[in-house]
Image (tube, rainbow, N blue to C red; front, side, top):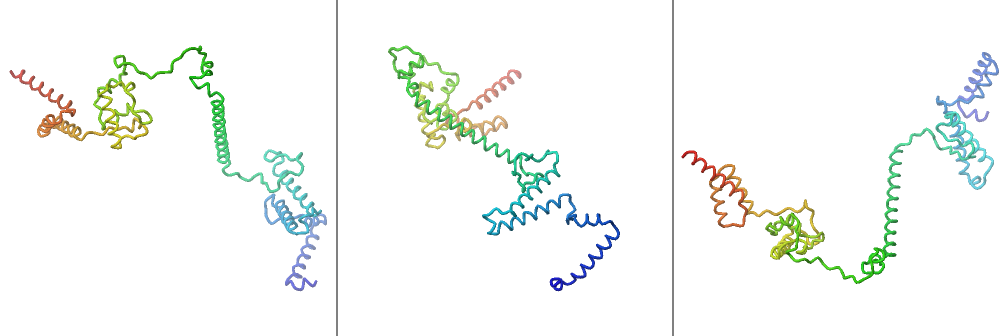
Length: 332
C-alpha cells in the first residue's frame, strides 16, 4: 500500500484487472481461467520466441552471478541450477526444431557437451572459399616439406657415396663394373681440321660474314655463361674464329650482348647497317616506281661500298636487260 501511493494510477489498474478477472471467471469455467493464468505469453509471435526469451533470461542471470565476487570461486547450487536449466532448454530447442536429428548432432551419449551458444541454422558465409584456401595452404606446406625431404636425401646420398661419383676412384670402377687396369685420363676433343664433320647449320654459319652488328649469328657461337666456344666446337677456320672473337668483343662493348650470359634466341636481334638499309630502300624505289635518281645513287654506292649486298638490285637489272633483249629480237 505504501508503494502504491507513490505510483499514480496503480490502484486504478488493479481495479480494472480485478474487474476483467471477475468477468472472465463468470463467463468461463474455473479450469480454463487457471490455465490462462499459468500459461506464459511472449511479446513475439514466433514459435521459438518463448524458448529464446527463457534462454536469454537464464544467461542474463548467470552473467550477474558470475560478476558477483562471492560466486566466482565457489560453485553454488544457484549457478549449477542455471547451468542445468540452460542445457535443458537447449535440448528442448534441438528436439523441437530437429526431431529426426538430420541437421544437429546426437549428444545423447556425450554427457554435458552441448554448446548452448551454437546455432545449427546459422548460414556459413564463404565456407567453400575457406575450405579451398585451407587445402591450398596444406598442399603448399606438403610440397615444401616433400622438396626439403628429397633435398636432404640427395645431400645424404652424395655425402655417403662421394667416391662413387669420382671417376678416378676405386668405388666408381666397382659401381660401373669396370675391370681394373691402366686407364688414361680423358683427353679433350682434338681432331685435325680435315677430319671435322660440321653440321649443316655450322656450314651455313661458316659462310656468313660475322660482324659486331650480327647479334643473331654471334648467338650460335656463345655458351650459356657468355664465353666464346672453342674452334673445335664452332667448326670455323682460324681466320673466321679470329673475326668471331673480334665481333663478340665489339658487340659486348656496344652493349648489344651481355658479358656473363647468353641471350635468348628471340632477344638476339641484328643491328642493321645504315648503308645497307639505305641500299634496300633505294632498291625498292627502283623496282616499284622505276626511280632514275635512286638508280643512279645505287650505281655510285656499288662503286664505293662493294661489301654491301646488292643482290636484289642486280637481279632486277638482269630481268630488265633480258626483257629489253626479247623486245629487240621480236621487233627485228
